[in-house]
View 1 (cartoon, chains in turn brown, orange):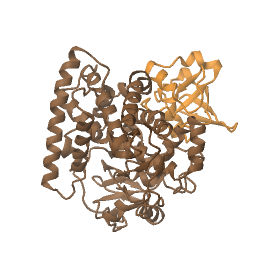
View 2 (cartoon, rainbow over the protein chains, first blue to last red):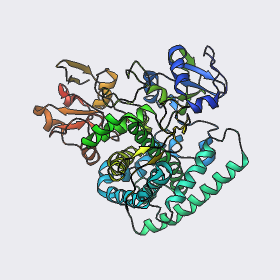
View 3 (cartoon, each protein chain N blue to C red):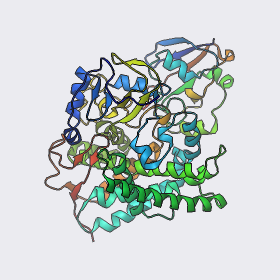
Length: 408
Length: 107
C-alpha cells in the first residue's frame, strides 16, 4: 500500500507553523484536541492524532496502524530497523536486542558503572561552581552508559553523542540539506565499522551487551541488522534520557518546595521521572501508516494514510490529567504515553529510569551544594520564556546553566 | 470459553468470558476491565498488567517464567507470592472460573 500524501476525505485541514510548533507546541495541541482531534496538517504532511484515548487505541492496533512508513527519513538515515517494522519481524529483532536492557540486568550488570561515570563527570566540574548540566553532565553520562550497554567499547562518549546528533539531524532533514545527509552518512558508516568489530569480539567472548545478545540470539540476526538497530538505538538513546534529566532538574530548581520534598524522600525521584516524561515528553510524536481503511476520531482514513501519534499532546489531555499543563508530583498516577505503547514500548525505559532517577538526579543534587539556575534560565514554563526549550518531534532543553558553591 | 473474574480494588468484580487460547491481559482489555494497563501490549516489558491470582488457584495457574519473574520485581504495587503478569497467563478451559485480584496501582 503506497503512502497517501494528502488529507483523508472529511479530515479537517489545520495550518500549523513549524517554527511556532518547535518553540511551544502545547497551545496548538490543546486547540486540536478541542476542535480537530484528527487533523491534516500540510506543513507536517500527516494527520495529527492528539487525544489520549485515540492514541492509546491506535497503539493497540499495530496491524492497522503500521510502523512500516514509506518515505520515512529514519529509514533513509539508518536503513531497515525494528522501529519501522511490524511483528513478527520486529519481534525477532526486539527479542534478540532486549535482554541487556531489562530491569534486573540494569540493576545487576550496569548500575555500578553508570554511577562511577556520573561521579567522574561531577569530579570534573565540581570545582568550577557553574556549568551547563545538559552539555557538561547529562549528555556525556547517557552517551557513556549507552556505549556500555550496547557493547561499543571501541567508541567514546563523544563519538556516541556526535553520531547521535548527526543521525537525528538526518531524521528531521525535511529540507533535504545535502550537508546534513553527508554528516549522517559519515556517522552511520563509523557505527557500522565499530559494530562489526565488536560483533567479532563478542562472537568469541559474550559480554552481556546488546551487540553480544544479538550476535548470540536463538533466532539468528545478521550483521547488517545488528548495525542498523544499533544505529537506531544510538539515535534515540542519547537525547531522550538527556532531555528527561534536563527538564526534570529545571522543573525542580524552579519549585523549591517540591525539590525539598524529594531530597527528604528519595523514593520520590521515581515520581519526578514519570511526571517529567509526561509533562514535556522527550519524544513528541511518531508516525504510523494505515494498512486498511479505518475510522478514528470521527474520520474514515483510507488505507495508506499517514498519521502522527502525538503522544506529547495525549500527555496533556485534560480528560485524563487534571491541570495537565502543570508539573505536579502529587497528581493521581495515570499511565502516560511518553514511552509509547504496544510492541514498540520503549526498549530503553528501564535503563533511562535507572540512570536518571536513581543516579543522575540524586548525585547532582547531593554533590553540588546550593545548586541554582543561572539568571535567564528562571523564566516561566512555556516555550519562549524558557529560552532553551526547543522542539516538537523531540523536545528538551538545549542547555541548563546552573551555579553552585564550588568545592576544592 | 473460560469465564474469568477480576476483583477490583474498590471491592466490585467484573466477569469476562474469554476466547480459549487468549491471554488473561487480552481478556481484561477487551472486557474493558479498569486497572489492567498493559502498556507494552503483552510482551512482558512494562510490568503494568500485574494481578494477584487467588491463592486457592495459584497452583493451577502455575509460577511465572524467568522473564516474567524478573519483571514482577518492578511492579508498582507490592509483589506477593501469587503475583503474575496477566499477559503471560494463557487461558484454557482448565482455567474456567479463575479469580484474580487487580492491584491498586500499575504505574
